[in-house]
Image (cartoon, rainbow, N blue to C red):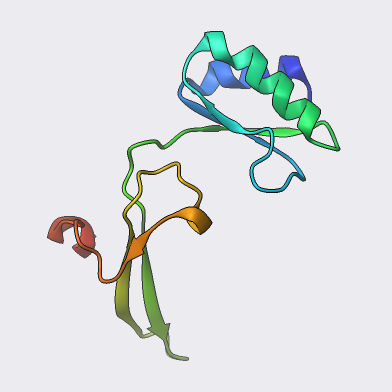
Amino acid sequence: NSFLEGKEFAQQIGFPLVIRPSFTLGGTGGGFVHTKDDLDAALDRGLKASPIHEVLVEKAVLGWKEYELELLRDQNDNVVIICTVENVDPMGVHTGDSITVAPAMTLSDTAFQE
């Protein structure tokens, strides 16, 4: 809710970060912060973009693999995985803008079993 609060929290969780302004459309005012040098400008931009002067400061998960499991669950809590859907784009591309393939093409068997 404040510039100082954002800076303090960012130092606690470390870099890289994602700054997400509250109540904006299409990621307006948000973005990735890779170093301390970029933090002040990103927080200022995000807080100004939010109509309620609020941002979410999160640890970035750049480089992670992103996939979904389409499943069917019955009333007895039995689950069948129907299909895997994998995001081809690197983590950090908005899901609505991401290219996906089904079934997953690069997900290892070990990751799939987990």
